[in-house]
Image (cartoon, rainbow, N blue to C red; front, side):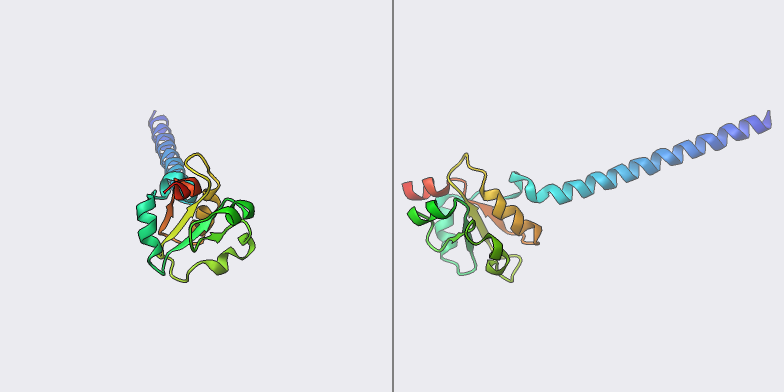
Length: 143
């Protein structure tokens, strides 16, 4: 009887330890997944208004990427913006050395998601101050 109770106790302890390990592993995996997907989360990037973007453009530390493509870029773009699509291969050389410098990405307008390409690429490289000009070129031209 004592051996049966001891065996039950050991199995219970092993089972509890296994559950704890699985939970810890799951929590670690979840945390890692959350951290690594942060750059792809649209909510990770604060939205700037046209007024805020105009103020940011006064700073020489702000880099702006237009993600609309070369045809759209030739027609209209935010002054000083870089055509991301035409320069995607050399994108890393266009980023500032300071990983806290302000980077703004935009595309066509509120429904366009192309801006995320530049933002997530900069984020994955360790840049921490990336913003989204949600009004896009439509909003810029309108104002």
